[in-house]
Structures are given as C-alpha cells and as structure tokens.
Image 1 (cartoon, rainbow, N blue to C red):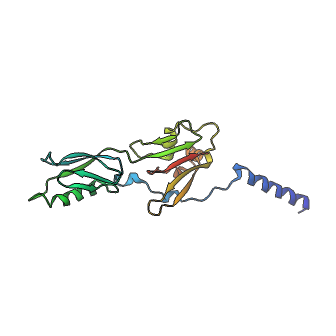
Image 2: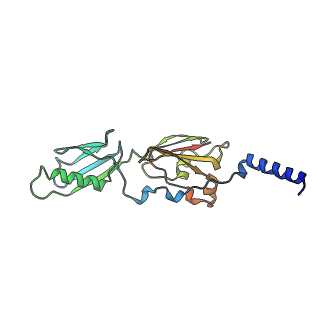
Image 3: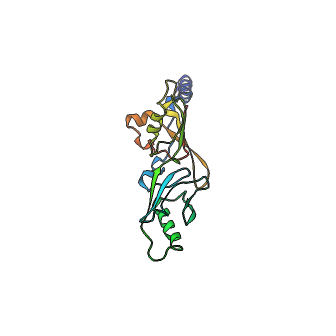
Length: 202
C-alpha cells in the first residue's frame, strides 16, 4: 500500500471519529434496569393513603406520608410507611394493633389514593421541560412526550437518563437513542423512569 493511500485512510478514520454518525454505540445492559411495574407499588414521601379498619371508623383514617417517611394512625401513633408496599404497611399496622385490641384483629386495608412521590424531571432541548408527577410509571418515550417532545435542535441519539442508585448513592448515566426506539430498532432502551430520575436532551 502506498504512502498516499495510507495517508488518505488515516484522514478518513480521523474524519469519521469527529462525526456523530460514526460514533460506536456504548454497550449498556438495558435489561438490567428495574421495571417497577412488575412489583407492588412502594410508598414514598407525600403519597396519600387510606387506612380502613373494618367496622371501626375511629381507627380508619386518611394519611399523607410525611418527609420523615411516617404516617400517623389513631391509637397506634406514628408508623414508618415510606419504602413499604401497602400490604407490608397493612401487616405492620396489624401487629401494632395487637397491643391495643383484644381478640382477633379486624380486617385492615391500605389503599393508595394519590401517588405524589413518583417524580422526575425532563430538561434540555424539549418544548416544556420541568418536573412531572404523572401518578403512574412512564417510559423514556412517554416522559419526553409529556415534556412536549424534542425541539428541532435536539440531538436525539445523545439523550441521557441520570439515575442515582438507591443503595449506593452513585450516579449512573444511561445513554438513550430516541430515534432507535422510535424505529423499533432498540426497544430495550425505552426503560421505565424511576422516582428521582432526570432525563436530559442535549
């Protein structure tokens, strides 16, 4: 191969490296990301719940999960609720009531009446960025749609979902290619947004 051919090949490689279209995709295991829709809902701060004790209106109450993660129930007092599924909270209440009520414990239900703790942000090159509390789990595509969609200046192949690992506090940056999701070429990237996530569109 001549020196001229080698020189041209080198220039081509450098040019390709400088273009977005020539970037090699960063390997990422999207399947490893959690899908909270497959598990019972976990209560968080500001969520509203209804605690019902069968045939006992004095113990039944509406409650809001306070910033310290607790709710207050008549007779029982403060109970830790954040981080628990409604069924888990119901069992905690049942155990606490055993100290006050004689005989069998009546049926208890815990119903989520308003989901507020599920909150995320979308920012960057979208039409209506901000903080969102949709009351249900949404995917990346749905989150961007809630923010009004991408502007003409957006870089759809460089979207990032910033996610803080709950157990370690470490920040993870999850690369998202909007166009590949839209075309069906990479549906696995359409992950479910978790509470506290931030979606950034450059």
